[in-house]
Amino acid sequence: MIEVKDVYFTYPNSIEALKGVSLTIKNGEFVAIMGENGAGKTTLVKHFNGLLKPTRGSVLVDGVDTTKVSVATLARKVGFVFQNPDHQLFSETVEEELAFALKNFGFKEKTIKRRVTWALNLLGLAQYRKTSPFMLSGGERKRVALASVLAWNPKILILDEPTIGQDYQQKEKLLQFILQMKAQRKTIIIVTHDVEFVAECNPRVLLMRQGRITADGKAQKVLTSPEILTHASIVPPQITQIFLQLSDFGLPKEVIDIYEARQKLLDVLERKAK
Amino acid sequence: MSVIETKSLTYTYPGATKPSIKDVSIKIKKGEFVLITGPSGCGKTTLCRCFNGLIPHFYQGELKGEITAVGLKVVEQPIHELAKHVGLVFQNPENQLFALSVEKDVAFGLENLGVPREEMQKRVKWALNLTGIHDLRERAPHELSGGQQQRVAIASILAMQPEVIALDEPTSFLDPLGAKKIFEVIYDLNRKLGITVILVEHRLDLTARYADHIIIMDEGKIVLDGEPRKILSSEEARLIGVGIPKPTRLYQILQKDGKIKLGNTIPLCSDEMAAMLMEALKS
Image (cartoon, rainbow over all chains, first blue to last red; front, side, top):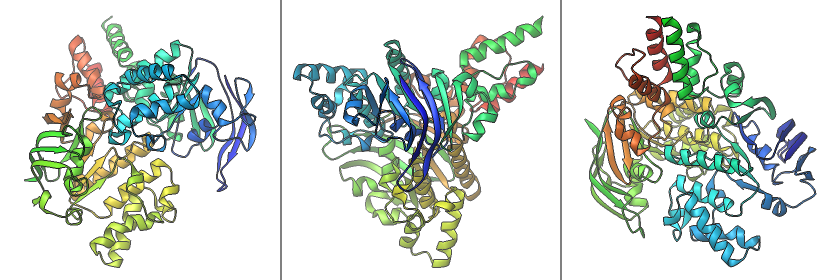
């Protein structure tokens, strides 16, 4: 569980990025943090693994204050995948990249081998085992970064913009993968601008603006309220955009899913027929 | 008239065992807004690097086949000559920005082109305003957020007003409203100034509406090439796993049901689909 209690954070250049954030994320929750550029999303999640410590207030991970433990200790529990994979990758081969953290955590050689293979297969990277990460495409490098964190099986997983550069099928896989992690009671936190991806997952959405949380609720509620969204520089999902224009016809506006959309339309048609 | 044309273009990076693009033959007309998409690793970025000569001049490797850009043979022209005509916005803005201030970064290309000072100031200001970063002009690019850096990278290319602009996932770090505004700016330049735009994107939900022409790549090859409404409603596009815009998908699903009578023009965005549904629900 992550507990954030009235956290303020000021960067050394005196920019105040967080201005009194409080929230609780329970074990096994799936949360999407959204909001405009510079809203403080990445700053907030960097507090979850202790990369940043609050200027004021406190962050507790499973009851432990992040100022009391090292990032290395927290990392075992909280895996963090950066927005830009180039900030994370450095090894000669994809395989070494994945093994690196495992070696540092002191896993046995045999376990390392097994875990690396597992993570490579999971993310469809097995054919690149011996390839340099820098020979791969942007989207593929992103997956290597994710695989390298998954390999040590952290309990809480933070993904900063996981869908950037990912094609439709990879996103579909990412979604399946997140659902699988959720079934294993892992906590998943994503920072994202990808409205369509969030609409497909329907997680809890935290909307941020200027260092504060401005909305907190199910995606289906938050992403279908144009008043809330405009302030956060977010555009409603495509399906919602259609339904927002159809409210005169007795259709609800809280629709984010394509099959739900079809059902609602057929319902209206049936009502009209009667 | 084609502004970019390739014939059986095949390219292999140095040290790679197989080509990244294979037998690519495309024609891009002057003034077109072209969308290039396809699964990650399919060769989109590599193809873009050929348009302004980064391939083969910078990346080396082995290039076979033919490519011309604005009538110039890419293989025979130095990058600085091609850069006057074809601007490329990189996928990762960090790879493109280097100056000490945003303003200097945006002015750099113009300095190299030898644009007179007054004209340069005018164009830098114009590009900074278009991309919404005028307030950031004194800041150092490397201190900016990913989204802000992308705006700088776009501004620095727009300032040069090349005949062709190729953009490789140019708004991936921007928030949705910011991305929408940038696409609208690019579309506007395409329509008003006739600049040819080549956009590499996965997010067709955001961009399909602007395109005159869509090219879909898979495993280094061109698999579909043509009119957006035709291509995005094709069975092939769905099978390759291209992210068909949700309004287009909804249209297809409803057409298959056959219970709601819809028009025949395949919608590419929510406004088109909403208008169509309004018609259907009124009757």
